[in-house]
Image 1 (tube, rainbow, N blue to C red):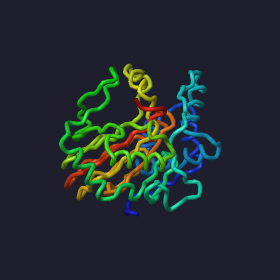
Image 2 (cartoon, rainbow, N blue to C red):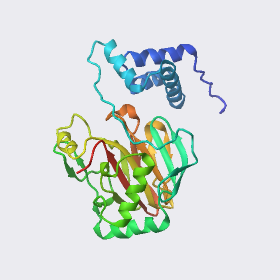
Image 3 (spheres, one colour):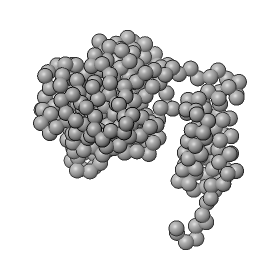
Image 4 (tube, rainbow, N blue to C red):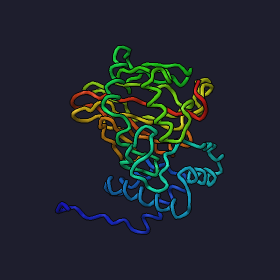
Amino acid sequence: MRTGITPQNVTPQLRQWIIDQAEAGCSAESVLEAMKAAGWNEDVAVTAMEETLGAHLQAKGLSPQDLLVQAAQAQGETAPRVTRVVVPEPDLVRSPLYLDGGDRRVAVLSVLAHPRVVVLGGLLDDAECQALIEAARPRLARSLTVQVDTGGEEVNADRTSEGMFFARGESELLQRIEARIARLVNWPVENGEGIQVLHYGQGAEYRPHYDYFEPDAAGTPTILKRGGQRVATVVMYLDEPAAGGGTVFPDARLEVAPRRGNAVFFSYDRPHPSTLTLHGGAPVIEGEKWIATKWLREREFV
């Protein structure tokens, strides 16, 4: 501890105050600002909030969404209507070291319950990584994002990569990878979008965002006609930058290193920030990064 700095102890009274603010409907940002204004160190305040609310929810058998509903009811508002759905899920009941991908074993490197994140080792081999890069390279163009007002696509300053989409099942290589993913996460092949390959040069990034489609956006009904909501994402790392380029989950304070052949899977059972699946591609500091992304839908993607 640095000399001259008074230690800040998180008391039971402070923990109860944090709970009271959350149940009254105060946002995390407003609670944090109030603590900082009262002289609390930001890191201490953030940790206190995360630990206190996490323990409170677990003790009461609640989810973050349940807390939002309670807060809305306390203020006499209509409770948020966010429908949960069944989502893809690897079979992790027995805490296996490896999963059966059909044509290979895939290592389970780490698991996070909320947000639901599973880091997979060796989902692709070196030859498959290189084959995807070479097949994608001639078709690369500036990456686009979904235009939420129309359901179309647009250039977005938050996304500074090049990319392209393969059609689902376009080649034997893609069929093999798609079947492997479907087996690993227990989700039908036909419920998956085509694989997207992205190339990030030095300095390129994708700022934090959600992969689900915003329920209230004007263009969402058009998008959902093709297979319903997105419910899970698989990001596969095809090539490694020398530095930077990790997949970051700001709400979970998690960063997944972009190691070639590995992948990160995450799911979201409702289109809502309470899933904590805000994520992004950190800037590439040195070298270049190639990834392949597979989005999974509720129903058959057409």
